[in-house]
Image (cartoon, rainbow, N blue to C red; front, side):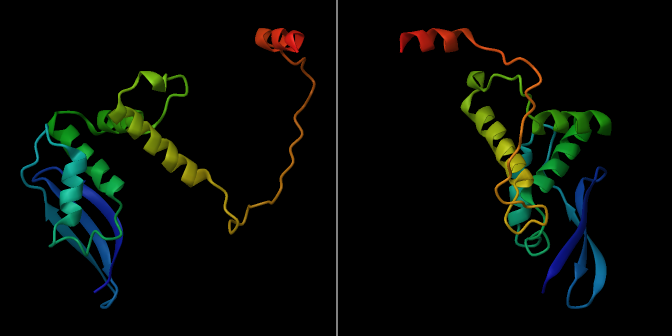
Length: 163
């Protein structure tokens, strides 16, 4: 059987992941409630999402749902269990999934650096123009305005004298 996921959400009391899907063979829209057991405010959301996605009872239904989306739903559930409001949890997720351009990535540990790199890779893939995109233009040439005086750097002028 083929299931096409339409919507995915979280229920806080009792904790469950809710999936609305279309059954391709019957042509009907259905709802599946997947209870979340043994999850606390100290649980790892990534691990919980992987376990749910690999659960034999739910595997076929969650095939088209990304692991990131499931992980985000578990973060909402953990925030609820910690006593946070939805707005606070959403702000926390926004902070964790965006990259500050002024942040020094050299000072991060390996785990945080890998997380930031994966966020950058996702953003790159999302913004990348491919040959089959309708807005793709081959060999784009851009002229930058020369109205302003170019700033020279001290290292640039010193190295020119040495040669």
